[in-house]
Length: 405
Ligand code: ASP
Ligand code: MG
Image (cartoon, rainbow, N blue to C red; front, side):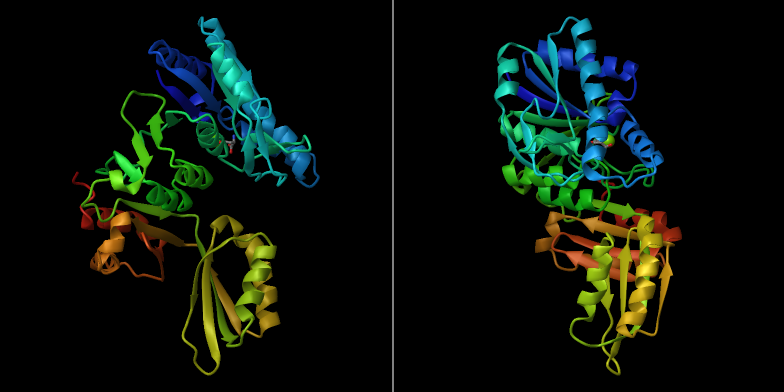
């Protein structure tokens, strides 16, 4: 008998038909002798719709009331799933985040879980119940409702699995697992059987929408294996686990791409201490996340600084940059939103020199120009022209033999 925590995402509970489908799956797992704790997201686009409603009130989307509102989405799906299971003859109970003992700090809309009191969950399990928990929410020690950031029910699920020492943690969505590249872009992309926490973290940060990066981090810190599965079929998924369990000879595990990219370049920035601080502090204070940064070599006591941000933040960033150019005495700036980031990810890179060179070669062979480069120990990313994204991803997938298992 295993204790399983299974999380079902918004698409898996998008309507009552789907809720009924996953209820059958949950019932089957219980019939096989497992104890089940289920974490749910809000139905379909509910969270987006709630944000739109809040926006329509005209005010600031303020923290406390926003979380009061957003947390209702997950409560709906938790209650509806519990009802559906009860109707199917299973004994199920739904719990809000706070009823389930999930305590967080008070950073509204991006709260971090600080503690889980598992007593209530355990009591309900002991009564033989299937416990359904509303994901994405917690409560502050002072008693206010919080939410855990977009995609936060992944983090709820992993944290609960760690808290109750589950035997298995499963994340169900509408994809079969983690692929060597986006299957919509590369026809021979393969599903990976395993991926390491570190690789998954890089992929999640790069925008593979499979899991919230914080959930991967939580799994990694607590050494909790996570299975990523499709709720619409019975295919085996991908297991996110420690690196030692992995295929030994794999150098690159996947190719990722991100179209939410824009580039800003500032010219003739005086080469003085403190300039980068002024620049990036102002961007951070305006809530703009900077990704890659490149500073050219100094000439005549000036250099150019280029950086990338999310394309959706460009309109917010440009007035800030305009101001900064004057403030720091730069000559001008330019920007482009027709860029994309392609990356290769692989834990095997650490012990295989020449991987970056192979990547640049594959891009050069396709006559793709590289605009910017950044690396981590297990990732190389290049900024290229957006129009060449698919060509680049296919070329890299082939170069690193990802089409062959
Ligand atoms: N419903 C929330 C969101 O859409 C949380 C989640 O889906 O994990 O971001
Ligand atoms: Mg969601």
